[in-house]
Length: 389
Image (cartoon, rainbow, N blue to C red; front, side, top):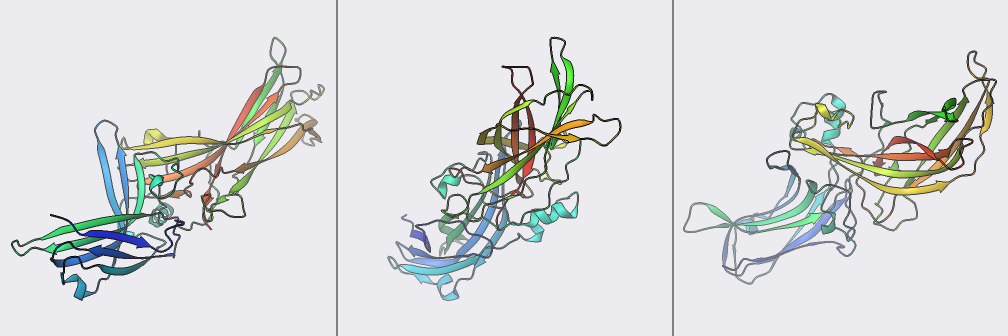
């Protein structure tokens, strides 16, 4: 039996830009039956689903539809008898919402903030090659957030008491919801993943006598605004700035040791995708995976952003506090972090089953005074948000 031909056409398909919150997805379904067809109903819907394949011991697959909006079809067409080889065109339009239905998040959440975050519309994630030529959004194959326009014809059979799906077609669409930059994270001192401060002891000689300490500190970098995304030409860079404050304190006040020489820095973007077939009741925290369910896991990837060389001078400061060395040294380094335009980036988000977070791992390379060849390094891992204005 030859099935009817169906084609879904969207407006301006030559430049498949992402659809944002409140954007209108507009197009038409074109279908031609190849035989006389008694139609029970015709459905056109905008739908979204999570698809997760997490394999701890046995295969667990979760396919969960969390959004479905049906477009009304004229009754005369929905209950008609369609003639063979007659082409029909049905226009449709959908508005991209900002939230999913409240009944979709019905599991326990640790607090109201997590529940409200889970109700926000998540962005498309995974299988990016079906939308754009750039095929890497740095997500695992086991987790996907997919949106589509779905068209189906249900046929009414004369020799049976039940309808039959005659044809079903799905057209994928890429959704990039607007998301405001959230408040900076409150990072607990016990956190083993994010690191905003680190202290290194500096030594010299065969006996490794301590000559002082160097402290690196920073704060959460300003968020990166994706706007139309790096796959669309624009006049701005998707970037932020990392500010590293360095402080060198000599071990003894009467021994004015020379601060270490700052040589270079390397910055990487770390991408974390959390997923599972069991919903998250808190924001995923890589510092405590032992508290997760066996059916929850994560995927990590990193990309290099920049390498900088330095020739900088420390600034001497005088300490007025008693019990501290009278002189210490400081210097501040600003490091640009520009996202490469050969990737597709999802904004930071947390949903019931899938989350995406980012951080900037910055490593400072230095050489202790008196050590001509040996280099040392110290790293910070600074949270950063990607958002869509």
